[in-house]
Every structure is written in structure tokens, then in C-alpha cells.
Amino acid sequence: MKSILRNKWFKFSIALIICLLMIVWVGNYWLLLGLPILFDVYISKKVHWAFWKKKGVAKQSATVEWIDAIIFAVVAATIIRMFFIEAYTIPTSSMEKSLLVGDYLFVSKVAYGPKIPNTPLSFPFAHHTMPTTTKTKSYLEWINWPYKRLAGITEIKRNDVVVFNFPAGDNIIVGQENPDYYSRIRQIVNSIKGSDMKKGRQVQADSYYKKIARKHLADNNEISSRPVDKRENYIKRCVAMPGDTILSIDGQLFINGKKQIKIENLQYRFQVNTNGSLINPRKLDEMHVTKSEIGQNGSTYSMPLSQEKAEQLGKLSNVSSIVKMTYNVGVPEDVFPFSDHYTWNRDNFGPLVIPQKGQSVKLNLETLPLYERAINAYEENSLSVKDSTIFINGKAADSYTFKMDYYWMMGDNRHMSADSRYWGYVPEDHVVGKASFIWLSLDKDKSAFSKIRWDRIFKWIH
Image (cartoon, one colour):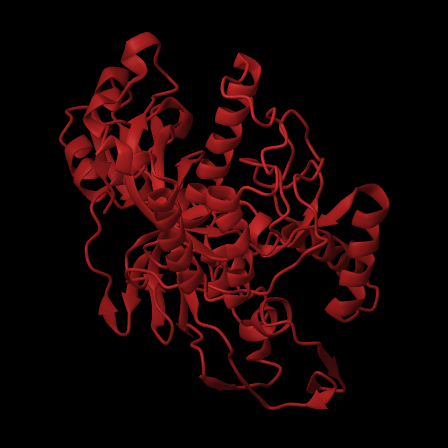
């Protein structure tokens, strides 16, 4: 058996089978031109590929062996990370209590099919910035491949927990990425427009104010761009699929006219009033309500709670009332689609149809804000409006047919989540993978071994 395993033809055959399977999966048959290299590595050995080793020396030095091991580990880990599975950490509370800050999880890329990197020339294990730096890019854009996704073992399903590239992360303010570039533009636009209205000046078109806002940001900050695969990774629940119609009434989400199925641990922010005494902090700790989530003004608290925990807290003798905090209908917020035609907010929005590949929509000045970014930024068309006429790629247009599928992503911590309500649809080419299971969970508010949340280790994500 040992002699077979050491046989160069056996090793070559195994390597060849793996390479052929990968080539078929990737679908790029130009890679077959690399098979002679594989043959030379295992059989003919005419070229000294491992240049860091001394040729013809049976016993290499310890340094060379370490280099050999490191190169193998980096290559293997890069392939695994790129095509199969990647580690991810939950940095914010937007998915609590389904996922907690400090959860370490694995994201399956084979679930929906891994994406071929847009920028394959990058530093190993770094996402978009070099380690120990704050703004040095970890990738080169000398090669920029178009979007292509390999075959997966399943498709995105409604209510899957999905990791994706941040859709509004194409332009960034270096060193000040939160709030995002487009939110900052809107803030400046609203400020200048509000000043004009207050001082009785003539109010200009939004395009005029946006031009001023962009110039202001560019003059005072370093503005950079990122390809799709190097944008920040976000994790949310896919609540609506391509072609779905969504509607939210006082925080209750409706999908195609039906209430969203019950999601365990779904949270809203509640106002909790007591009889004047304080709530025992130990009780809040038992309910896994962290200190950073609690707002307090005397005996009045605000905190995120699931309906079940709200009822549980309401049974305390010193709690006089618990009310879910909602934004009323007609109270506008800075939410998608960022237009005066829609007075939507985080709790009341829609109805809204999620774009679907091959679907055509009517375009006019009222509907354009719903689809503008998808047409322009995601599907890379030039888009302009002149004298109330919409032009796409230089031609007047009153409709548009989508080239990609889109999804609506929301956090389970509904009042503490930056999600599709604040930047719109997630295009299919931004989807990274499916959150699979938690392999470690650490509570930042505790110390030593008490930091480990033992009940969450090796827990599947639903």
C-alpha cells in the first residue's frame, strides 16, 4: 500500500483528477493548457518549480522545509477560502438574538456556488486592506474579471442567513466608512437644501445639490472605490426573493400579502416603564440584554427584546408597561428609495416589488428612484434625466428589463440594523455565501473562561 501511495504515477493521477474536476467546475477550459506543468511536476521533472529547494538534495534544511510547509498551507487555505468555506465574525448587534456579537461562524460558499474573484491578485487572507494598515489596498486591479458564479449545491431561499458584499460600498470615504458615502451625500444635500428653504432662496434640483456635496467630500476627504468582491461583508436574513412584493406595517413584514413566517428571536425596540424602581441588572443579564443595548432615563428604559422576552419582562412586579417603539405611517426617514415621492420609514414601507432577472418595469420620474441604482450602479448602464425624459445609454427609455436577480436583506434586530431599508436591494453578484454554523462564541462583557458561550459552540444557523 505504501509503495502505491509513493508511486509518482499514482500521485499524478490523483492530482490530475482533482484538477480536471476543478476545471469543469470553473468552466474555463483554457486551464487545460496548464496540465503539462502538472505532468512535469510529478513525472518528467524537467523544470525546477520549487526554486527555493536545492535540486537533487534528498534532505532539505529546516528552513527550506518550513518554507515548503508555509507555501503549501497558504495555497491550500486560499483555495478553501475562495471556493469552499470562509470564517466570519459577527461585529454588530444587527442579527441579535439569532446571532450575537462575538459569534465566530463559517460561511459556506459552495451552498450557492462560489464567485470567481473580480480581483484575483490580492494578498492572502486580507479582505480589502493590508494587515496593520488603515488604507493600503490588499489587492491589485490589473486583472478585473466580470461576475461569474460556479455551480452550487442549493439556491438562496427565503429566510436564509446570507453573507454578502455591502451594496453601497462601491465608493468610500477612506478612514470614515460609517456612515457610508451615499448617506453622507444625502446629509449634505438635505443640509444645503434646508438652508436655502430657511433663508428664502430658490430651491434647486437635487442633482445640483448632489454635485456640491460630492465636491465638498472630495475636497475634504480621500475618496476611493472598491470592486464588488472587496466591499465590506455584511450578514442579514434574506426576507424577500426576486419577484416578491414586500410591505411593512408598523414593523410587521408581509411577503406577497402574507405575514412573514415567525422568526425565533426576532427583536424590536421596546420602551419599558417601571414604578420608579430600577430593573435588576442580573435579570437583564439572564435575558442576554447587554449593557450597550440599553437606554435609560430614570425609571424609563429602551431596549431590544423579542416578543417572548418582552412578555417575560412585563411580568416583573416593578414593570408598569412595555410598548413597542415604532415609526408611524407618514413620518419620513432617510430610507430607500430616498425620494420625496415615498414617505417611508423603517417600520412602514412598501408595497415594493423586488426586481427579478428578465422582469420589465415601467420607468417614470416617480418609479425611477426605486430602480435607479440597480440600473446605473449594479447593471452598469449610463442613466440620466433631461427635461423629465429618462435616458439609458443615451436612448430615451420608459421601461427597463433587469439582467440580474435581487434580494431584500434585513437584520433580526429590526430597530438596530442597517439593512436593505437603508440601501435597497442586494444584487445576486454581491452574494458571498450562506452562514452555516457557529464554531466559537465569546462574550465581550465577560472575562477568562466565562467569556465562552458554551451553549453556542458548533450550533447550526437557522
